[in-house]
Length: 71
Image (cartoon, rainbow, N blue to C red):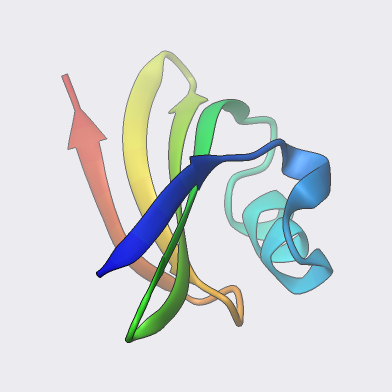
């Protein structure tokens, strides 16, 4: 069991926001979801960078767990 909720960039933990800014310079964030379950909290983002879209998943420490290109 767990929960998913949409959040804004300003609601992200500071360390996660800084990791996104560092890893994806000049990217446009289209959507952010906070996923909380027994394993902890993760953040799933839809990011557009240079006309390419990516689905990115980060943990609560700002580590990128998964990055995949979206058509």
